[in-house]
Picture (cartoon, helix red, strand yellow):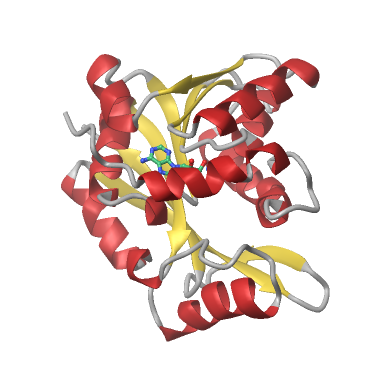
Length: 235
Ligand code: SAH
């Protein structure tokens, strides 16, 4: 089991901001804005109602909470203690049904309860870990045969450097400087190869676009910057 697949500096970044997870005008505004888009996409493909769902790297629970409200029974896991406390408190305050949070790595949970979840989501997280392939493998172990695993991350090319780092962190100030590191970005073909090697077949992909003038996000087929992959375990 891999227990060292974590970058403490990455966890500290998110923990330091933890009190702002549910402030829609904070550093987490982009996650709040993209949340309905990704929720709809996931729900449309996997059908969340009455499903058992795991959200890996759940942070303050923005997606986990929304999936529970869509009718799933959701477990959110992360390794940033403060973020998990915020997620728990939010669920309590807003009386979200059927959501719980645990501080455990994906790899450890995979060893503990393999093939338990109908749907696994792992959004905006792979680009923050030392060994993303190990997370992909853990997700493949955690999902039931026939179940869905969703990933989102940032593509690696000159445009994504310009948009996701220079644009988002230095020009538009959408994200704190240093949020993302170019070398950790993952090309869709690389992520798809990691998925295939652990028995996850790519079913669909979407790109996420942002217009800085209207401050709106939308999904389309262009995966050149921020993108999502929908995969399924067949075995
Ligand atoms: N998935 C959430 C939060 C994304 S922010 C969303 O899209 O709304 C990235 C999250 O990954 C943070 O909460 C951070 O604490 C978490 N993270 C980073 N490294 C991790 C690791 N090794 N294991 C679990 N979570 C991790």
